[in-house]
Amino acid sequence: MDEDGKLLGVMSKGEALRLAEEAGLDLVEISPDASPPVAKIVDWGKFNYQRTKQLQKNKRNVKVVEIKQMRFGLKIGENDLAVKLRKVTSFLEAGHKVKIGVWYKGREMAHQELGYKLAAKVIEMFGDSIVVEQSPSLAGRQLSFVIRGTGKALPNLNQEKKNAKA
Picture 1 (cartoon, rainbow, N blue to C red):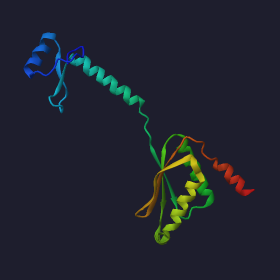
Picture 2: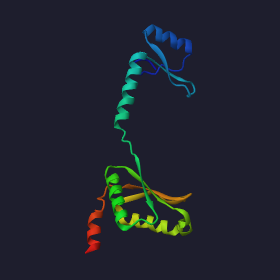
Picture 3: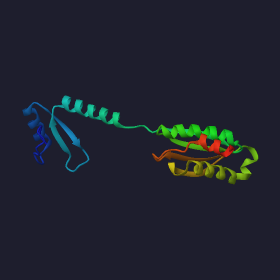
Picture 4: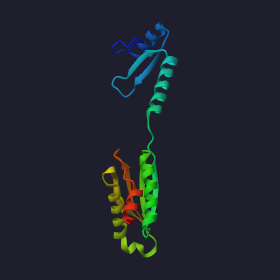
């Protein structure tokens, strides 16, 4: 290709270098894996500058999604669970994914089903306002799963607590 983007066809390396020198530009290999390799006659400084600017622009437009983590014990109380779920709600509203881990201590490993029930309870409390990206799975002494928001309004866990008291 020449500086205007016109295809010059298949030619030898020496001929391509001669054309680049005549134009006062550089010969840059664009696609080395192609058969035959694709090269372009361009001003290297300008080409490199434009490529760098494009990469910076692409980097600015990327939204980084963090994975936040919340740990529960198997014997967590209702109020403690509500506090932690409010924090999880704030993470989800900020657009983060949340990895929730239920930790087993000592003999609690004999009752693994209680961890799965707690995980199901957490998922049920959020309802259809979340998507479970990684279903609950046991790895060692930790049962973990990953959730993210769907964009629907998240439940107000403070209201549910007040309604339960009434």
